[in-house]
Amino acid sequence: MSLTDQIEAMIRPSIEALGYEVVRVTLAGSTRKVLQVMAEPADGRVMSVEDCARVSRAISAVLDVEDPISGAYSLEVSSPGIDRPLTRPKDYDRFAGHEAKFETHEPVDGRKRFKGVLKGVRNDAVEIESEGEIVVLPLASIAKAKLVLTDALIAAHQAQEAATLN
Image (cartoon, rainbow, N blue to C red; front, side, top):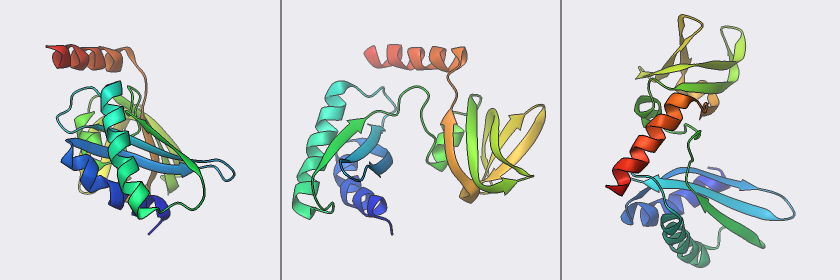
């Protein structure tokens, strides 16, 4: 298990107890380490600055006790944003109908990069429509996936923000 996986396992219970979900945990840098934690409210509302601060305090408390990172580091807590990474199987279903970019570990049909409209997850694979064809990417083969910033995605995000305010 990688250090980021260990850290995610340590902090996940505290974050979930507050009503949030972990989207991604990364540790970057060699001289100045930065632990980046991306989280979002479990109820689907838009993440606020106050939410980030609340999650940060909870993570800091766990990390102060567990101390998994040797040496100094900075903690950054953020929301996934509009053109968010897709890291969990449910993300592919949640954002079905939106355009996304993918990079695979190994070539799939001779390619490692794909762009298309998400159709969702079926049988442990992501289906996308790309250039008029359905492309099937096994979940285990996906190295990176991210939504593409489009007018439709922005409109959906604005509608979500409006619903959160009401």
